[in-house]
Image (tube, rainbow, N blue to C red; front, side, top):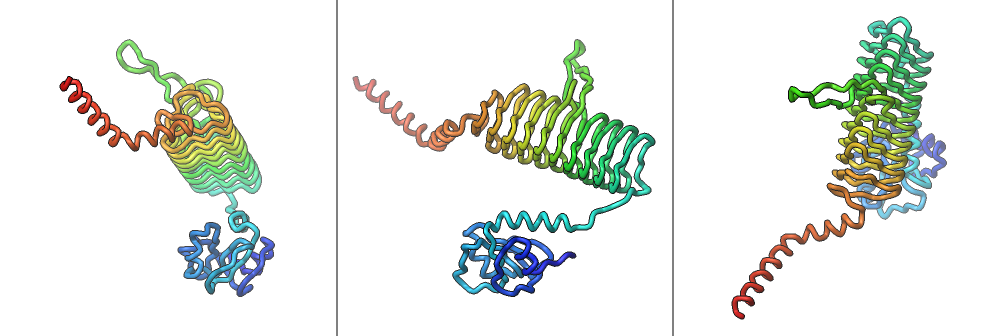
Length: 346
């Protein structure tokens, strides 16, 4: 376990120490769950009460923070505690020892090329024509089909499967169980009442600096490519259909589904369980709320909520009415009754 003292942390972050400069930590925790030897942080004022009870050894706080009670932990005051936590986590991650070497239990076919300083774990299969860049970390039970390319510094966690002909860029992270390049969902009804499979002859192209969550599936294109552009971040359990294109730096939370041939622009945010129908185009900078269903094109910069999704303000107005429906129903019934009585008394 790596240990860092308050003095080291303050030096790295340019912070001010209030307390014991020799206090040391070896892990990170939330402030409410802090224990001896952990580093916690206070970024939200509503969690301040936990500062006075936490067992964490060191707590990062903003420079302008003044405690209202005695604090047992050593404080490190920094300009922006949230940003500094990220820097520390990056430092900690970079300091972890990297795995090295190719396991004798890995299968690497003749004609595959593996760059320098790579790690390839047990029972990984690397087929003919695969090209793996320098410094990749390929964990056990990964499958790389014929002709797959993997860029420099990419990490493939256990059980990742990349079908033949697909490419993954540099510095990507694919978490356990991700499947890249399975067939798109394409079938044609036949005269016998069944379905004929439409061959899926394209591939998947994942550009640099993409992160893909566990058990997320990205289907190969029918022709050409399914494309995930640079900087995209996809959560766990997401389904990306054939020939979909996702623009740079777009983020999607878990359980989103994007049907075939749809296009999502750059810098979009799709919350959890969003559904996007086929052949839909979503512009740049679009934000879509949880559980929303998109069945029509969305212009740049729009906000959508609901199923089917509506523009943000329209949805909120409709939602306000929806909450009042039971009351409005009673009023309508009462008005109808009053109108009937009025007509009967004429």
